[in-house]
Length: 72
Image (cartoon, rainbow, N blue to C red; front, side, top):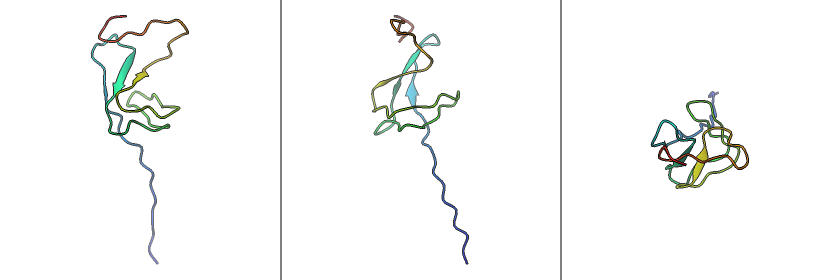
């Protein structure tokens, strides 16, 4: 009898972060990234993020500043 192993692999998160101080990045994976995808730094998505949309790389408080390209 054959041993069958089923794996569900999470896709690699490809994103664009231009400047070290950016607190958001742009998702570039085809079809975006599904909930549960884990980034190399441990960030885990809680919902689907479509391709081309921004994702917060850390907690940003209400009325907090979005930093992209090193600028607010």
